[in-house]
Length: 305
Image 1 (cartoon, helix red, strand yellow):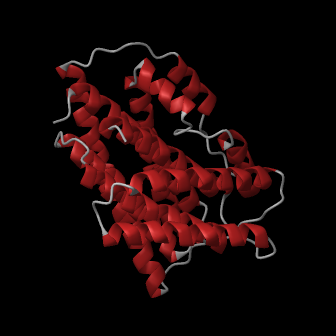
Image 2: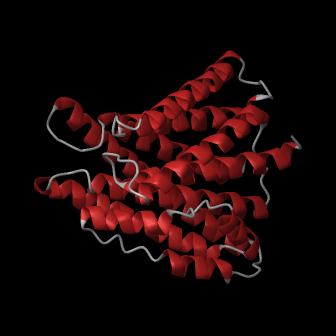
């Protein structure tokens, strides 16, 4: 059973990444429609604002330890986020209105907290409120995907990308349910978590390849390499769900994939590569990689792996 400190840490770690991921998804969704689909643009914006409320609450609850891990692990913003957001604003003529510098100042100023019953009650309430938002976002993605499949709606994002966003936020919901049930990580749960994340990262590589200008053959080839590499790990899990070597193999692969996406972002900022998706999408992929590595390292400390 999770103790108060674990409930605190694991809840806020989830919120700082997945809620910011949801906000980034909402930005991408809002930028993917024509102006005559204002209803969907407005709904995406509204969900993004609610995700921001979750982020702000999570930051306000953090103690020095988790705030430091958030900053140093680049699980909220990456070294490229500020410039990538400015590039997105310039290319799409929008104002994303996210003050990351202020958020980092708050994180760096956090002190000690008392993990008492009153605080954990507030964290539980936040988790329950967030589950409501998670389910609304999933329904939003499903609704859009259904209309895209029927030819009743057009988006610059692939229909399959809405499945990807749904699946990513579904992982958020499942882990919040685990925390609300006060269940610890287990070897099996961790391997299952690795399965879901390997599948999500495989899809990020597919999107990098699919959204890419075809003249960039080197990026195309490396994305293909990672698609195949993640697929091998997925199949390894399906053959033996209790294989304890899966996590170590995953960590090595994801560390290399982190370098690959970082290089893409650097080239994006130098206008050396071109994608038909907002630059924030690629930065969100890197954040996903960063949080995955953080979770793996955290879990390994639990199981001494």
